Length: 190
Ligand code: GRF
Image 1 (cartoon, helix red, strand yellow):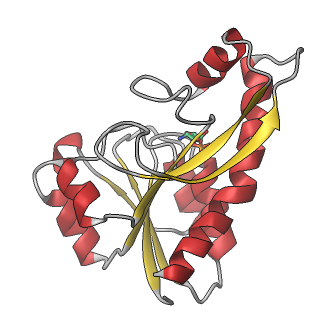
Image 2: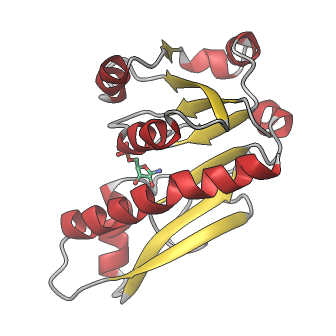
């Protein structure tokens, strides 16, 4: 489908959000991108300003009191991308956007996922676990952390000399390479 309106939910830095916005700039597939964050201090707010993309800051309660639906409806959002969004998606929202809401996780699910497994903690756990390989997982979102069905995975080596930060960097590169392309393929099928 052309003319998709995408909402990107991000709680932090927003490098994936920025990368996705740049990727779809000028694309016929995407008419509008909106950024949503619950974190008033998120660096993604700066990025949005720089990119001249509309950003809406909401309260956590808005995920449950209907306000989030008002925002999404007002902007005719038909596809949601989670990019470093740290909150659980409520059942009603996951159901309303069934197979139209995706997340990216910085490890090879089902390993190293679940509550509390985000950011550098994931990479620390991968290194502590003695893994020789890590990667990214792009999956549909359901109301449990990191449990929706897997759409795509890509692998990278874990090196003996890796620290959580160096592994995080390698994983970020993989995310930036693949997340927009996977989203593009999903949009084409809508
Ligand atoms: C990414 O590593 C992603 O896998 C995870 O949160 C991180 C967000 O990074 N869900 P950024 O804010 O896009 O830089």
